[in-house]
Image (tube, rainbow, N blue to C red):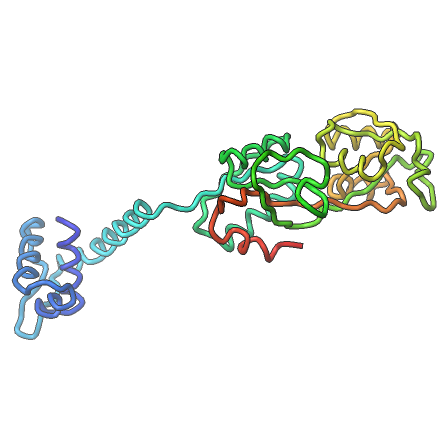
Length: 292
């Protein structure tokens, strides 16, 4: 039993005559008849009752029909999947935003580009993600930056032509424990923070870079660790901390931290790719509706 025989079988079922099936398939009527006879011999039974008014399925033909359609559908699906390579997007993302922001980006891609095969690669080092984009190991990466040109926050850019798309804002808050000397301040200016301890992560941390842009050398930096450690130290009154709103929302609601009254510019979640290599056709358009 061959797929071409099943296609001829279905054509005869649909047109009820050898001549009609031959016209639909672009075959000679003799070829259609031979294909049907060969199929019947392979199955050991007749599939049609031949009559002057046309061909009707026998009981065996009725049983074969759903199998024929199922087999041909599967063959067509296999052909499509083998012949058509799905476009691939290896997407890098900072672990800081992997749980809070990346799922929404992936959902947008799944909705707008269901043909896209996306694999997520998270990392703690921005340089590694951008280096992966520059080297072609990643098609794109999600990083945090400030408004303006790429890298305006103050981080290193690899020597490659990079383009970007802003997807959403990431608001920041300057926080402290309620008992901190600044915890009850009615209003603050940058000079009011002079000499205070600012709890920070590594020099490459996006939130530390944002703090340096905001406060310069007016504060004393105290190295703590990642977001969770910095937040916990701030709750214990060890200093003030500049952290993303999503990381301190519960603490602000419960009162273990308070937001200090100083205007703080936020960051932006940016999708970065090589400008000279379109990572996926239509990627910018697929994500643009989610842009801020």
